[in-house]
Length: 451
Ligand SMILES: Cc1ncc(C[n+]2csc(CCOP(=O)(O)OP(=O)(O)O)c2C)c(N)n1
Ligand SMILES: [Mg+2]
Image (cartoon, rainbow, N blue to C red):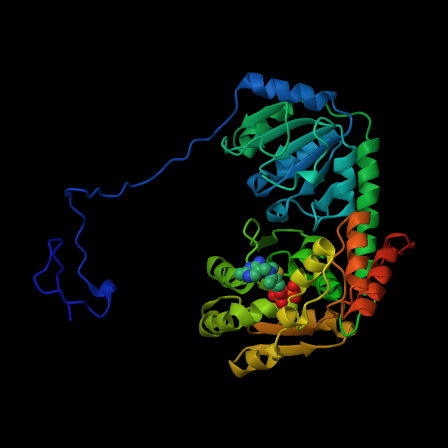
């Protein structure tokens, strides 16, 4: 039924079946009713010349410059690369800015923080100058000690700038416009030893990551899932990671390159976004493959239901590839580890254990591809197949829950807390101990180039 609705209160309200079927009538003016604006033009914010000169003086004086980029630097990648070269600097990436710069650049130290890399950690500990671009990274214990480095920050949001480090100058401006103003004032550092040292640490770090991924952990070491993906990842992949242990391995094992995009629930860290993010990414770019890494807890929360959305829409996507890799460990593992590491508390099985389910069988029951993986040696071919499939695919990967998400520095206090937890009677104490030692020892062993 087609009805014309009056803005005045109708005497009898008839609700149409479908509001989209109503006749359109343009809005008119009325009390408390403002017609919408037709457009917006965001200004290009550029800091004052004097402020840019002060920043250039600080950066020119520094001998060991560290750069931290966040998602605000997206779109300024080539300028960040240029300034890193001029300053002989290394570049660390906050988690939401992981896709800002390629990890194939030798001076990119990767993620920073508890889920970060050792080269990022060391760079922040030893730098004398810190340039932050488009990041509000909150974990200041992973930045230089206040006063140990001279700070310059670029951020378009003046209400947030300078919150995380006592900078000498804060430049409120768009990342690209500000770097364009700054770069002509910089002298290329003649001494390249700081950057060269960072580059050799980065090269070694990736070897350690390869070796950690290959540590045997029955049935599958979850790091291997990410490591093998990174060997075959399409340069156009859109990756999402959930807020479980997947976030740790995404942060450290996935190497960004090409046009790859990455997303996770960065500031909120809620469970459940990985599959919906992947679906959203497919609607935005139906011609690119999407890959979601998600824990079994989050799959049981909403991921399985979201697979029904995938089943409904995948035929509309020009490129039907959407892979959901489930870290099947029957555990709310990230929290199990948080309790062990921070609270010195053993696993509380009643709260942490998950009911068993086959994510692969669920996928095939709704017309998607599904594959159960219990052998790490299969992962390489499993990824190749999933990324060549003619429809979305769920990889149900049976992962070992005792592989430790070690922080980059694994400080003594955390190791002590862990030990305390084990002594208190953690049901997984032997598995955890074995995997921790086997993983940690990779940092000191020599590694070949192909690892
Ligand atoms: C909505 C919501 N509930 C609870 C948490 C706390 N939390 C963070 S990770 C996690 C466990 C995730 O388990 P799972 O999805 O199985 O991933 P795993 O860590 O086992 O790989 C929990 C409970 C959260 N971040 N968001
Ligand atoms: Mg789990």
